[in-house]
Amino acid sequence: MLAVNYSSVRENFKTYCDKANNDFETIVITRKQGGNVVMLSEAEYNNIMENLYVRSNKKTYDRLMESIAQLKAGRSQARELLDE
Image (cartoon, rainbow, N blue to C red; front, side):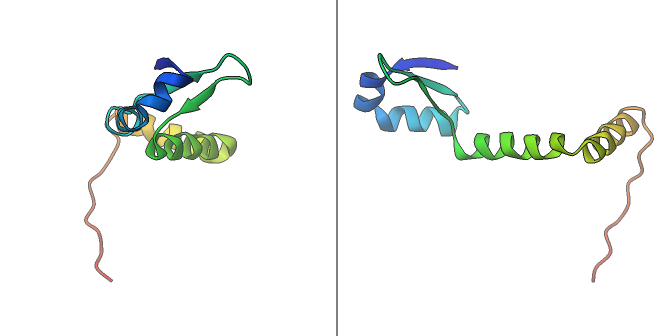
């Protein structure tokens, strides 16, 4: 996570956009007044939203955690996909 002041981001906007996208860097844009702002890539934002959605439904989240536990315990099977 980078903390950068507003003026620096304004002067080097493309550079910070590239850092957010290419390096998955979260950038906190600090301001003297009005509160800080967080810049992150769309991919990172979508990942956060997906995680929030999965965790918001306890049944879905528990099922996912059980599947992960089964995989780690070696209780998984490879299957071929069917062509439709």
